Length: 419
Image (cartoon, rainbow, N blue to C red; front, side, top):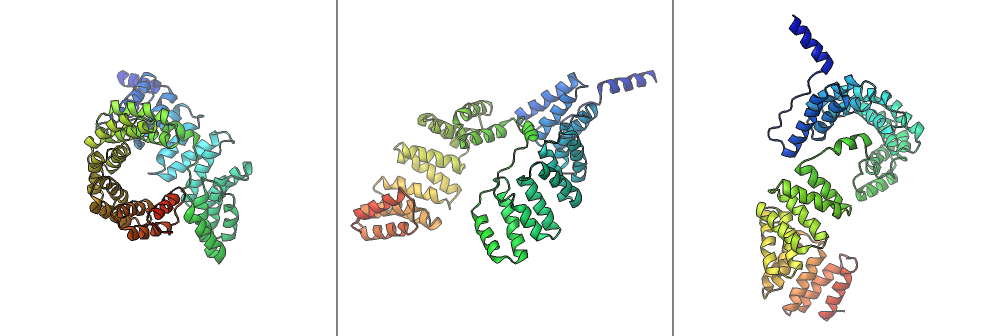
Protein backbone atom coordinates (compact mmCIF):
# COMPACT_ATOMS: atom_id res chain seq x y z
CA UNK A 1 0.00 0.00 0.00
CA UNK A 2 2.81 2.36 0.95
CA UNK A 3 4.64 1.50 -2.27
CA UNK A 4 1.54 2.29 -4.34
CA UNK A 5 1.08 5.65 -2.62
CA UNK A 6 4.71 6.54 -3.24
CA UNK A 7 4.36 5.64 -6.94
CA UNK A 8 1.22 7.81 -7.15
CA UNK A 9 3.01 10.77 -5.58
CA UNK A 10 5.93 10.27 -7.99
CA UNK A 11 3.52 10.22 -10.95
CA UNK A 12 1.82 13.42 -9.71
CA UNK A 13 5.13 15.22 -9.23
CA UNK A 14 6.65 14.16 -12.53
CA UNK A 15 3.54 14.03 -14.70
CA UNK A 16 2.67 11.17 -17.05
CA UNK A 17 5.49 9.63 -19.07
CA UNK A 18 5.94 11.01 -22.56
CA UNK A 19 4.69 8.72 -25.33
CA UNK A 20 7.10 6.08 -26.56
CA UNK A 21 7.50 6.17 -30.33
CA UNK A 22 8.62 3.18 -32.38
CA UNK A 23 11.04 4.78 -34.85
CA UNK A 24 12.01 1.58 -36.65
CA UNK A 25 12.06 2.30 -40.36
CA UNK A 26 12.21 6.06 -39.84
CA UNK A 27 14.76 8.29 -41.53
CA UNK A 28 17.73 8.23 -39.08
CA UNK A 29 17.67 12.02 -38.77
CA UNK A 30 13.98 12.03 -37.85
CA UNK A 31 14.43 9.16 -35.39
CA UNK A 32 17.28 11.03 -33.70
CA UNK A 33 15.21 14.22 -33.41
CA UNK A 34 12.30 12.34 -31.80
CA UNK A 35 14.63 10.54 -29.38
CA UNK A 36 16.32 13.79 -28.39
CA UNK A 37 12.99 15.54 -27.79
CA UNK A 38 11.74 12.67 -25.62
CA UNK A 39 14.95 12.64 -23.56
CA UNK A 40 14.45 16.33 -22.82
CA UNK A 41 10.97 15.56 -21.48
CA UNK A 42 12.37 12.81 -19.27
CA UNK A 43 15.01 15.19 -17.91
CA UNK A 44 12.42 17.92 -17.22
CA UNK A 45 9.11 16.08 -16.65
CA UNK A 46 7.26 19.16 -15.35
CA UNK A 47 8.22 21.30 -18.34
CA UNK A 48 5.25 22.05 -20.57
CA UNK A 49 7.68 23.52 -23.08
CA UNK A 50 9.62 20.25 -23.35
CA UNK A 51 6.46 18.20 -23.85
CA UNK A 52 5.07 20.70 -26.34
CA UNK A 53 8.37 20.72 -28.19
CA UNK A 54 8.26 16.94 -28.49
CA UNK A 55 4.75 17.23 -29.87
CA UNK A 56 5.94 19.79 -32.42
CA UNK A 57 8.74 17.48 -33.59
CA UNK A 58 6.25 14.65 -33.98
CA UNK A 59 3.69 16.82 -35.77
CA UNK A 60 6.38 18.15 -38.13
CA UNK A 61 6.94 14.57 -39.29
CA UNK A 62 3.23 13.64 -39.30
CA UNK A 63 3.43 11.28 -36.32
CA UNK A 64 0.09 12.59 -35.15
CA UNK A 65 -1.19 10.23 -32.43
CA UNK A 66 1.76 10.64 -30.02
CA UNK A 67 1.91 14.33 -30.97
CA UNK A 68 -1.65 14.73 -29.72
CA UNK A 69 -0.68 13.05 -26.46
CA UNK A 70 2.23 15.45 -25.99
CA UNK A 71 0.11 18.54 -26.66
CA UNK A 72 -2.56 17.30 -24.25
CA UNK A 73 0.08 16.85 -21.54
CA UNK A 74 1.60 20.27 -22.26
CA UNK A 75 -1.85 21.90 -22.05
CA UNK A 76 -2.47 20.31 -18.67
CA UNK A 77 0.86 21.62 -17.38
CA UNK A 78 0.41 25.14 -18.85
CA UNK A 79 -3.34 25.77 -19.24
CA UNK A 80 -2.90 29.45 -20.18
CA UNK A 81 -0.52 28.79 -23.09
CA UNK A 82 -2.50 29.02 -26.38
CA UNK A 83 -0.01 27.18 -28.60
CA UNK A 84 -0.62 23.74 -27.09
CA UNK A 85 -4.39 23.52 -27.69
CA UNK A 86 -3.80 25.12 -31.12
CA UNK A 87 -1.27 22.47 -32.12
CA UNK A 88 -3.50 19.80 -30.59
CA UNK A 89 -6.35 21.00 -32.80
CA UNK A 90 -4.11 20.93 -35.89
CA UNK A 91 -3.03 17.38 -35.02
CA UNK A 92 -6.69 16.32 -34.75
CA UNK A 93 -7.96 17.90 -37.98
CA UNK A 94 -7.50 14.80 -40.13
CA UNK A 95 -8.76 12.16 -37.71
CA UNK A 96 -11.22 13.99 -35.47
CA UNK A 97 -12.32 17.41 -36.78
CA UNK A 98 -14.98 17.82 -34.08
CA UNK A 99 -12.37 17.49 -31.33
CA UNK A 100 -10.11 19.75 -33.38
CA UNK A 101 -12.77 22.47 -33.37
CA UNK A 102 -13.06 22.25 -29.59
CA UNK A 103 -9.32 22.68 -29.07
CA UNK A 104 -8.96 25.37 -31.72
CA UNK A 105 -11.74 27.27 -29.91
CA UNK A 106 -9.81 26.95 -26.64
CA UNK A 107 -6.72 28.31 -28.36
CA UNK A 108 -8.57 31.26 -29.89
CA UNK A 109 -9.86 32.24 -26.46
CA UNK A 110 -6.29 32.26 -25.14
CA UNK A 111 -4.58 34.02 -28.05
CA UNK A 112 -4.56 37.84 -28.18
CA UNK A 113 -7.35 39.30 -30.33
CA UNK A 114 -4.81 40.52 -32.90
CA UNK A 115 -3.89 36.94 -33.87
CA UNK A 116 -6.28 36.29 -36.74
CA UNK A 117 -4.76 33.10 -38.18
CA UNK A 118 -5.96 30.76 -35.39
CA UNK A 119 -9.44 32.30 -35.54
CA UNK A 120 -9.58 31.81 -39.32
CA UNK A 121 -8.45 28.19 -38.90
CA UNK A 122 -11.27 27.68 -36.41
CA UNK A 123 -13.77 29.37 -38.73
CA UNK A 124 -12.70 27.15 -41.65
CA UNK A 125 -13.02 24.04 -39.48
CA UNK A 126 -16.49 25.01 -38.28
CA UNK A 127 -17.55 25.75 -41.85
CA UNK A 128 -16.40 22.30 -42.97
CA UNK A 129 -18.38 20.79 -40.10
CA UNK A 130 -21.53 22.62 -41.23
CA UNK A 131 -21.64 24.78 -38.10
CA UNK A 132 -22.36 27.85 -40.20
CA UNK A 133 -23.53 30.36 -37.59
CA UNK A 134 -20.48 29.75 -35.38
CA UNK A 135 -18.21 29.93 -38.39
CA UNK A 136 -19.75 33.20 -39.57
CA UNK A 137 -19.25 34.82 -36.16
CA UNK A 138 -15.50 34.17 -36.32
CA UNK A 139 -15.13 35.35 -39.93
CA UNK A 140 -17.00 38.54 -39.04
CA UNK A 141 -14.78 39.03 -35.97
CA UNK A 142 -11.71 38.98 -38.24
CA UNK A 143 -13.46 41.28 -40.71
CA UNK A 144 -14.17 43.80 -37.96
CA UNK A 145 -10.44 44.14 -37.38
CA UNK A 146 -9.53 44.01 -41.07
CA UNK A 147 -12.31 44.88 -43.49
CA UNK A 148 -10.11 43.85 -46.43
CA UNK A 149 -9.22 40.39 -45.10
CA UNK A 150 -9.11 38.14 -48.16
CA UNK A 151 -9.40 34.93 -46.12
CA UNK A 152 -12.41 36.23 -44.20
CA UNK A 153 -13.99 37.36 -47.48
CA UNK A 154 -13.43 33.95 -49.05
CA UNK A 155 -14.82 32.19 -45.99
CA UNK A 156 -17.91 34.39 -45.87
CA UNK A 157 -18.37 33.86 -49.61
CA UNK A 158 -18.29 30.09 -49.16
CA UNK A 159 -20.67 30.35 -46.24
CA UNK A 160 -23.17 32.56 -48.08
CA UNK A 161 -23.03 30.23 -51.09
CA UNK A 162 -23.73 27.24 -48.84
CA UNK A 163 -26.77 29.09 -47.48
CA UNK A 164 -28.05 29.83 -50.99
CA UNK A 165 -27.26 33.55 -50.75
CA UNK A 166 -25.51 33.83 -54.11
CA UNK A 167 -25.68 37.64 -54.35
CA UNK A 168 -24.10 38.05 -50.90
CA UNK A 169 -21.45 35.47 -51.83
CA UNK A 170 -20.43 37.50 -54.88
CA UNK A 171 -20.10 40.63 -52.73
CA UNK A 172 -17.94 38.90 -50.11
CA UNK A 173 -15.69 37.39 -52.78
CA UNK A 174 -14.69 40.85 -54.00
CA UNK A 175 -12.29 41.02 -51.04
CA UNK A 176 -10.68 37.73 -52.06
CA UNK A 177 -10.38 37.81 -55.85
CA UNK A 178 -7.20 39.91 -56.03
CA UNK A 179 -5.18 38.32 -53.23
CA UNK A 180 -2.52 35.73 -54.28
CA UNK A 181 -3.57 33.51 -51.37
CA UNK A 182 -7.26 33.37 -52.31
CA UNK A 183 -7.84 34.55 -55.89
CA UNK A 184 -8.05 31.16 -57.62
CA UNK A 185 -10.45 29.78 -55.01
CA UNK A 186 -12.43 33.03 -55.20
CA UNK A 187 -12.77 32.92 -58.99
CA UNK A 188 -13.68 29.24 -58.90
CA UNK A 189 -16.54 30.07 -56.55
CA UNK A 190 -17.42 33.25 -58.49
CA UNK A 191 -17.85 31.15 -61.62
CA UNK A 192 -20.36 28.93 -59.83
CA UNK A 193 -22.13 31.89 -58.21
CA UNK A 194 -22.49 33.82 -61.49
CA UNK A 195 -23.81 30.74 -63.24
CA UNK A 196 -26.37 30.32 -60.47
CA UNK A 197 -27.39 33.98 -60.78
CA UNK A 198 -27.67 33.70 -64.57
CA UNK A 199 -24.91 36.25 -65.11
CA UNK A 200 -23.58 34.71 -68.30
CA UNK A 201 -21.07 37.41 -69.19
CA UNK A 202 -19.58 37.49 -65.69
CA UNK A 203 -19.40 33.70 -65.64
CA UNK A 204 -17.54 33.62 -68.96
CA UNK A 205 -15.14 36.29 -67.73
CA UNK A 206 -14.54 34.41 -64.46
CA UNK A 207 -13.86 31.18 -66.40
CA UNK A 208 -11.35 32.95 -68.65
CA UNK A 209 -9.49 34.50 -65.71
CA UNK A 210 -9.59 31.24 -63.76
CA UNK A 211 -7.94 29.34 -66.61
CA UNK A 212 -4.92 31.65 -66.48
CA UNK A 213 -4.44 31.91 -62.71
CA UNK A 214 -1.60 30.12 -60.92
CA UNK A 215 -2.36 28.10 -57.81
CA UNK A 216 -3.06 30.11 -54.69
CA UNK A 217 -0.08 30.81 -52.47
CA UNK A 218 -0.60 29.36 -49.01
CA UNK A 219 -0.84 32.05 -46.33
CA UNK A 220 1.91 31.71 -43.75
CA UNK A 221 0.72 30.46 -40.38
CA UNK A 222 3.32 31.94 -37.99
CA UNK A 223 2.60 29.30 -35.37
CA UNK A 224 2.70 26.29 -37.67
CA UNK A 225 5.86 27.75 -39.22
CA UNK A 226 7.55 27.01 -35.88
CA UNK A 227 6.58 23.36 -36.39
CA UNK A 228 7.82 23.24 -39.98
CA UNK A 229 11.20 24.59 -38.90
CA UNK A 230 11.68 21.38 -36.92
CA UNK A 231 11.47 19.18 -40.01
CA UNK A 232 14.68 17.26 -40.52
CA UNK A 233 16.01 14.36 -42.53
CA UNK A 234 16.65 13.70 -46.21
CA UNK A 235 13.31 14.79 -47.68
CA UNK A 236 12.99 17.91 -45.53
CA UNK A 237 16.50 19.11 -46.37
CA UNK A 238 16.05 18.48 -50.10
CA UNK A 239 12.65 20.21 -50.17
CA UNK A 240 14.07 23.23 -48.35
CA UNK A 241 17.09 23.41 -50.65
CA UNK A 242 14.85 23.11 -53.71
CA UNK A 243 12.74 26.01 -52.45
CA UNK A 244 15.88 28.08 -51.87
CA UNK A 245 17.13 27.33 -55.40
CA UNK A 246 13.77 28.40 -56.86
CA UNK A 247 13.87 31.67 -54.94
CA UNK A 248 17.47 32.45 -55.86
CA UNK A 249 19.08 31.45 -52.56
CA UNK A 250 21.52 29.06 -54.24
CA UNK A 251 24.38 30.06 -51.92
CA UNK A 252 22.27 28.85 -48.98
CA UNK A 253 21.05 25.72 -50.76
CA UNK A 254 24.47 24.39 -51.78
CA UNK A 255 25.91 23.80 -48.27
CA UNK A 256 22.64 22.25 -47.10
CA UNK A 257 22.76 19.85 -50.04
CA UNK A 258 26.43 19.08 -49.36
CA UNK A 259 25.41 18.17 -45.83
CA UNK A 260 22.55 16.03 -47.17
CA UNK A 261 24.86 14.14 -49.54
CA UNK A 262 27.33 13.50 -46.73
CA UNK A 263 24.58 12.25 -44.42
CA UNK A 264 22.75 10.26 -47.13
CA UNK A 265 25.48 9.19 -49.59
CA UNK A 266 23.07 6.95 -51.51
CA UNK A 267 20.45 9.64 -52.09
CA UNK A 268 20.16 10.18 -55.85
CA UNK A 269 17.73 13.10 -55.27
CA UNK A 270 20.23 14.89 -53.04
CA UNK A 271 22.89 14.36 -55.72
CA UNK A 272 20.56 15.70 -58.41
CA UNK A 273 19.72 18.89 -56.53
CA UNK A 274 23.34 19.42 -55.51
CA UNK A 275 24.27 19.13 -59.20
CA UNK A 276 21.70 21.79 -60.04
CA UNK A 277 23.03 24.07 -57.30
CA UNK A 278 26.65 23.68 -58.40
CA UNK A 279 25.62 24.41 -61.98
CA UNK A 280 23.85 27.60 -60.90
CA UNK A 281 27.02 28.61 -59.06
CA UNK A 282 29.10 28.18 -62.23
CA UNK A 283 30.84 24.94 -61.23
CA UNK A 284 30.08 22.87 -64.35
CA UNK A 285 32.74 20.23 -63.65
CA UNK A 286 31.55 19.77 -60.07
CA UNK A 287 27.94 19.61 -61.24
CA UNK A 288 28.77 16.92 -63.79
CA UNK A 289 30.58 14.80 -61.21
CA UNK A 290 27.63 14.88 -58.82
CA UNK A 291 25.03 14.30 -61.55
CA UNK A 292 27.04 11.33 -62.83
CA UNK A 293 26.82 9.86 -59.33
CA UNK A 294 23.05 10.53 -59.28
CA UNK A 295 22.67 8.61 -62.53
CA UNK A 296 24.74 5.72 -61.17
CA UNK A 297 22.45 5.55 -58.14
CA UNK A 298 19.23 5.87 -60.16
CA UNK A 299 19.70 4.97 -63.85
CA UNK A 300 15.95 5.34 -64.48
CA UNK A 301 15.78 8.89 -63.11
CA UNK A 302 14.53 10.94 -66.05
CA UNK A 303 15.36 14.28 -64.46
CA UNK A 304 18.93 13.26 -63.56
CA UNK A 305 19.63 11.77 -66.99
CA UNK A 306 18.22 14.85 -68.74
CA UNK A 307 20.16 17.30 -66.55
CA UNK A 308 23.41 15.40 -67.05
CA UNK A 309 22.81 15.11 -70.79
CA UNK A 310 22.08 18.81 -71.21
CA UNK A 311 25.18 19.69 -69.20
CA UNK A 312 27.39 17.47 -71.35
CA UNK A 313 25.80 18.80 -74.53
CA UNK A 314 26.37 22.42 -73.53
CA UNK A 315 29.98 21.54 -72.69
CA UNK A 316 30.46 20.40 -76.29
CA UNK A 317 30.34 16.63 -75.70
CA UNK A 318 27.32 15.35 -77.62
CA UNK A 319 28.60 11.76 -77.83
CA UNK A 320 28.68 11.43 -74.03
CA UNK A 321 25.36 13.28 -73.74
CA UNK A 322 23.51 10.97 -76.14
CA UNK A 323 23.39 7.91 -73.79
CA UNK A 324 21.76 10.11 -71.12
CA UNK A 325 18.95 11.18 -73.43
CA UNK A 326 18.46 7.63 -74.68
CA UNK A 327 18.18 6.43 -71.08
CA UNK A 328 15.61 9.15 -70.37
CA UNK A 329 13.59 8.06 -73.41
CA UNK A 330 13.69 4.42 -72.31
CA UNK A 331 12.24 5.48 -68.97
CA UNK A 332 9.74 7.91 -70.53
CA UNK A 333 9.22 7.29 -74.29
CA UNK A 334 6.84 10.25 -74.74
CA UNK A 335 9.36 12.82 -73.48
CA UNK A 336 9.46 15.34 -76.32
CA UNK A 337 12.43 17.24 -74.88
CA UNK A 338 14.41 14.00 -74.76
CA UNK A 339 13.81 13.34 -78.45
CA UNK A 340 14.70 16.96 -79.26
CA UNK A 341 18.03 16.63 -77.48
CA UNK A 342 18.71 13.34 -79.25
CA UNK A 343 18.16 15.21 -82.51
CA UNK A 344 20.70 17.83 -81.44
CA UNK A 345 23.29 15.19 -80.50
CA UNK A 346 22.88 13.28 -83.76
CA UNK A 347 22.90 16.48 -85.78
CA UNK A 348 26.49 17.12 -84.78
CA UNK A 349 27.46 13.91 -86.58
CA UNK A 350 26.87 12.82 -90.19
CA UNK A 351 23.66 11.15 -89.09
CA UNK A 352 21.04 13.47 -90.44
CA UNK A 353 18.36 10.86 -91.08
CA UNK A 354 18.21 9.79 -87.42
CA UNK A 355 18.54 13.41 -86.30
CA UNK A 356 15.55 14.45 -88.43
CA UNK A 357 13.55 11.45 -87.21
CA UNK A 358 14.21 12.47 -83.60
CA UNK A 359 13.11 16.06 -84.24
CA UNK A 360 9.94 14.82 -85.96
CA UNK A 361 9.14 12.58 -83.00
CA UNK A 362 9.60 15.55 -80.66
CA UNK A 363 7.17 17.58 -82.79
CA UNK A 364 4.66 14.73 -82.88
CA UNK A 365 4.72 14.47 -79.10
CA UNK A 366 4.72 18.21 -78.48
CA UNK A 367 3.47 20.21 -81.49
CA UNK A 368 4.21 23.57 -79.82
CA UNK A 369 7.91 22.80 -79.21
CA UNK A 370 9.19 25.53 -81.53
CA UNK A 371 12.85 24.62 -81.00
CA UNK A 372 12.22 21.20 -82.56
CA UNK A 373 10.98 22.81 -85.79
CA UNK A 374 14.11 24.93 -85.87
CA UNK A 375 16.35 21.91 -85.29
CA UNK A 376 14.54 19.95 -88.02
CA UNK A 377 14.82 22.86 -90.45
CA UNK A 378 18.56 23.18 -89.84
CA UNK A 379 19.02 19.45 -90.46
CA UNK A 380 16.90 19.59 -93.63
CA UNK A 381 18.84 22.58 -94.97
CA UNK A 382 22.15 20.83 -94.27
CA UNK A 383 20.77 17.90 -96.29
CA UNK A 384 19.97 20.22 -99.18
CA UNK A 385 16.19 20.14 -98.64
CA UNK A 386 15.67 23.90 -98.56
CA UNK A 387 11.98 23.88 -99.45
CA UNK A 388 11.15 21.35 -96.73
CA UNK A 389 13.26 23.36 -94.28
CA UNK A 390 11.34 26.52 -95.13
CA UNK A 391 8.02 24.71 -94.58
CA UNK A 392 9.08 23.68 -91.05
CA UNK A 393 10.22 27.22 -90.27
CA UNK A 394 6.91 28.64 -91.44
CA UNK A 395 5.06 26.11 -89.25
CA UNK A 396 7.13 27.30 -86.29
CA UNK A 397 6.47 30.97 -87.08
CA UNK A 398 2.74 30.25 -87.15
CA UNK A 399 3.06 29.33 -83.46
CA UNK A 400 4.05 32.98 -82.84
CA UNK A 401 7.20 32.35 -80.81
CA UNK A 402 8.56 35.27 -78.85
CA UNK A 403 11.90 36.94 -79.43
CA UNK A 404 14.74 35.96 -79.66
CA UNK A 405 13.54 32.60 -81.05
CA UNK A 406 11.50 34.35 -83.74
CA UNK A 407 14.66 36.13 -84.94
CA UNK A 408 16.44 32.79 -85.23
CA UNK A 409 13.59 31.38 -87.31
CA UNK A 410 13.59 34.39 -89.65
CA UNK A 411 17.38 34.17 -90.01
CA UNK A 412 17.07 30.50 -90.96
CA UNK A 413 14.38 31.35 -93.52
CA UNK A 414 16.78 33.79 -95.18
CA UNK A 415 19.38 31.01 -95.39
CA UNK A 416 16.88 28.80 -97.21
CA UNK A 417 16.25 31.57 -99.71
CA UNK A 418 12.67 32.13 -98.49
CA UNK A 419 11.37 35.70 -97.93
